[in-house]
Image 1 (cartoon, rainbow, N blue to C red):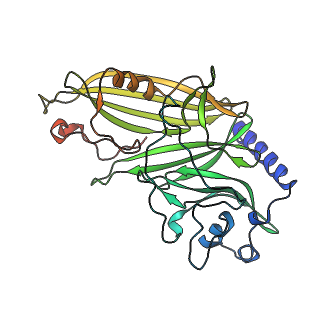
Image 2: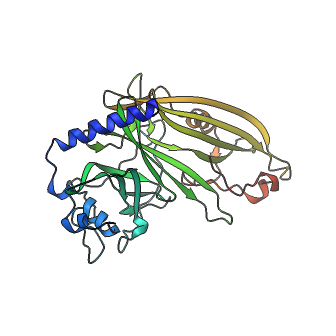
Length: 337
């Protein structure tokens, strides 16, 4: 067994031992009918994690409340309080009923699963709902940890990792454009686990405690800016995320190139390339880092100098470049980190 795996297993065992020694609310224990089934149905999982779920109608009260009685809510950092705000998106109307498309299951081990129920969706493709760490015991299903998660349900992957002595939930998913063929980009959320709860919190500065940005990490993003000179500047960002004993390690790279509207057939001219590594850690019950993302450090000076986004697209979707400015060789069929 690798050292990281051993460290994670030790932390998980400690978590389950702590949970088992404390009385759990009855609403976080599965009903007998679910425990008797070999394979639980989606409605079983909905009823386990959602307080007041109506099996006959297939809906939960709105706003949603998790099985511990805590409202399922999410607050993104705002422009005035963070170096980088959270993604902008409008909530869509609640679904008429929950289906298996609103359920994400991930096996941690044979008797342990991560379960995410998407009760609300947003215009940028994200979903919001309760997420739980559920153990199957001889007596039935028991929720060992719980919280609210906002992430991308499409091609989603949930996993528990060990960052030092803190367990974190990493939720990855993707958003795709409506083009044919589509352009897909992956994003990740990170939620620390403390005392049986997954916490959604922003990344704070290690030096002064100010907000650097949400714990929302695009693994690929793109923006086109119109410069005061009339040129267009294309900014492409890629990142990898790994959880290691020292913390959450992000290796970031930005490539910037210029497009001349007076010469639309010319390929993009390289302007700048930069890369950096960020390490985030959990200190004093907070997720902290030494600097904002490389994207913020390079894009903000452009905006302060008078550059304007070509189109105000949601952060999860690639911006549209005017057709006459995109040479054929600059188009890509699909982008994946």
